[in-house]
Length: 127
Image: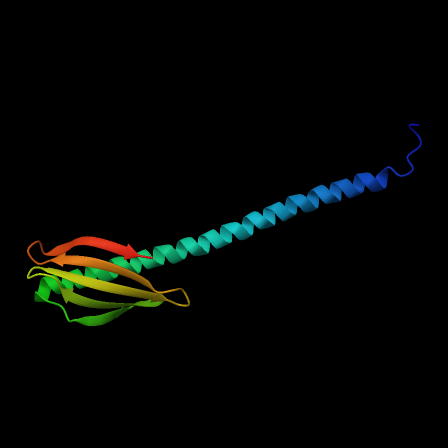
């Protein structure tokens, strides 16, 4: 029985190839998932950076001039932020930001500027 090896090599080789293929398929799926996650994380960080830069620029403009133009835009390398202001009270302004990056859907955010404090007091992001 030890010397009778007819039919033994094919099933063993097939199992080894099947296991190797499954291992490679799992690794490929993990790689693709990580790449999608990286792209999404990059996009989210870019959005946060653009909003933060817009808020800082708007806050600086408010602080230096005491008022801000009713609407305008900030242009970045990958997208644009459009903003518009409305006066809620004598000291509080509401600034609406609309961010558009490439083909992604537009994101809206709001901030409230208090002239007595000289800074933004509240931030809301609407998804």
